[in-house]
Length: 206
Image 1: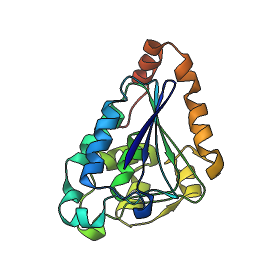
Image 2: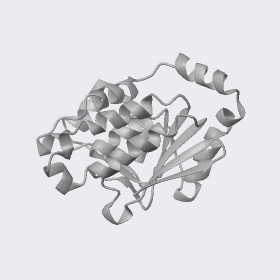
Image 3: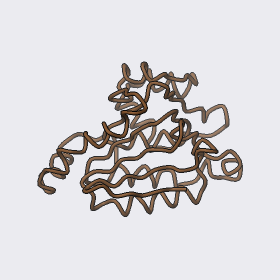
Image 4: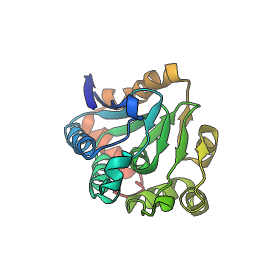
């Protein structure tokens, strides 16, 4: 349910469980961690999903069985943040719950107009993963982070863009082409130079 494809210097990692809104199981998280680890040599990495939802977060049955508090979420987001090359979240639809951490850990986030963003862990009695509020606050500030996490509000793509949670909004048909276009300079550049520039840029938290 995790597909990996190579396009020149790009590794594209795709969540492929569209019949379940790309809800994540423990095995999917483990496969994602392995896929990200295998992409360390890529000039750029694109994370995306099949269908009209990026990810609904944890599979509900798996969450009730303990996945909601698994350290795998933090391991995954830390692995994404540590990638030496450019990492882009091409959000083909709504991002919910723990899947938010994947997007927050990327360098850039682009999304379709239909995407919505929400993180309703509190009402289910769970805490967000430790790095997620830190990264979210760095992007959109403390008040808007509390608006999402404590007030339980859902952001539209337009709101997310105005907040700084995402960087561009594009029609569905243009999303992947734009993601690949954003990788072009990194692919063409000297690898050491590109990696050094990324290290110079302030990161939300590794």
